[in-house]
Amino acid sequence: MESLLGKVALVTGASRGIGLEAALALAQAGADVAVNYLRSQNEAIELVEQIKKLGRRALALQADVSRADEVKRMVAALEANLGGIDILVNNAGINPGRPFANLTIEDWNRTLATNLTSAFLVSQAALPHMRGRRWGRILFLSSVAAQTGGVIGPHYAASKAGMLGLMHSYANLLAKEGITSNAIAPALIETDMIRNNPAIRPDLIPVGRFGRSSEIADAVVFLASNGYITGQTLNLNGGWYMS
Ligand code: NAP
Image (cartoon, rainbow, N blue to C red):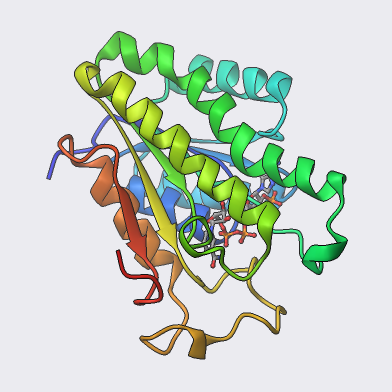
């Protein structure tokens, strides 16, 4: 596997859940890591301290990644402190729950902005550095919802399917420049996102349990360490959807 030593990673939404484990795993694999968060400042600072203890550089960056102005500010701060982004994990996401017939345009816009527009904004901001270095890894935390519709609703499924289009386009456009673009499509990973939702039960999953954030983090490191996989969706779903 290619070493990640000296590479700089940005994980959006890294204060909790999958993003937190991915940030930690990338640091364990050698990368310096910027930890983006929206509100969970204490958790983000605690994670930064943990990463520094591993001997890596780390930085907590507050920003709402659905907003162009905040993404610009965040990436400028990252570049000033750590250099540019070599590995981008587009992970920040929300899943507003409401019976689908009652979904509002506000639910739709907020979900699309947070889950999909954010990935476009941060990727576009990261690309000049990656293209200059002719090395980069762009990862998208999509979902089984992109493939089957899932259990959250049409707003969430559409946002996650949109990420796959974005991923395929970057993979095509950047293949000759040393930059790979891939997606991870998890199902039912035990984080705050799925807690307290009675529609989400482990018996839905063929392997009979929820997934662990650390299992997704392993896949993040794997894809970041491999220059020949691009344009792919890696399914980590306990056998729920078989490709
Ligand atoms: P989570 O535990 O709810 O954590 C969400 C993270 O996103 C938090 O760090 C949160 O920051 C951050 N965030 C939310 N809105 C943001 C914004 N506008 N700007 C910046 N950060 C923002 O979620 P998770 O389960 O780890 O999910 C991570 C990703 O995997 C999501 O994209 C999700 O859709 C996807 N996914 C999850 C599952 C699952 O079963 N858990 C399945 C498939 C796909 P704060 O802590 O500051 O609020």
